[in-house]
Amino acid sequence: MVRPSLRKEMAEWAVQYRSASIALACRAFSISETCYRYQPRLSDENKLNADWLVALTTAKKTWGFGLCFLHLHLRNVKGFGWNHKRVYRIYRELELKMRIKPRKRLQRERPEPLAVPETPNEVWSMDFMADQLTDGRSFRTLNVLDDFNREGLAIEVDFSLPSERVVRTLNQIIAWRGKPLAIRVNNGPECVNSRLQTWAEKAGIGLIYIQPGKPQQNAYVECYNWTVRTEWLGRYHFNKIEEVQEHATRWLWTYNNERPNMGIRGITPIQKLKAA
Picture 1 (tube, helix red, strand yellow):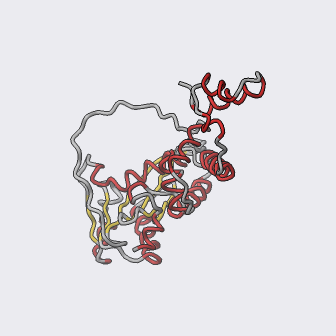
Picture 2 (picture 1 turned 90 degrees about the vertical axis):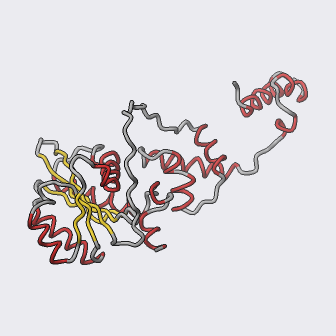
Picture 3 (picture 1 turned 90 degrees about the horizontal axis):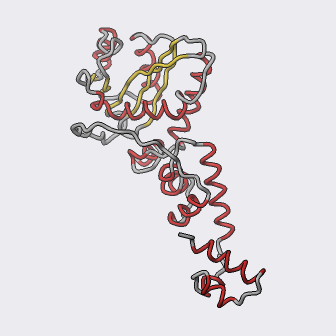
């Protein structure tokens, strides 16, 4: 089916180059004379919309329309009040829609939703990730998240992250952010180590251990890990560990200050923290 905008262009061509009357051209291409004579009044604003859409899709290749464009980034972060239907129409005309290959998913029982903390520093989540440099050397990342506003508190990167290093990183976060009431962790060797347990007991911080084989019980940081993997860790090749740490620091600022989060109603973690 040909869109009305294209039928209007064909009618204008028939009038200009075939000397057809406007009434005849409109009947031939099934449009009204009102549609033919209509002149858009928001062409400059539409061009601005298109420029923003192209720029965002170029810079944020993993963001779809709902996350990157009107409802979240452009509306909540940048403050534009554009009508979402008009922006989506321009988005479709520019053919910017992400093409995601569907995956077959297994039917599983739906886990119980995690309780959402009511204040900052009520519960933090902590987890580890692993990857490799271009020379084959393995490195790890320690990701720490505040469950209240999904704010990334730290991404510590090194070839080895023993419990002593974990404690040092947590102390650095507490020095500027404050002490949490509890930290949710898995059953990895760094988390069940007596060094971390002794530190938590002295600091008055509870450790919430998830059940073995139940990562959905730590869903906030698992979702955060997926974002880390898809938006930068899995998209680049790193030659040195310093490059990984530098990229992690830059991305963490963008994540907290510019990237809308679907889990907190499409605002950024810093916006929710300020509102609280």
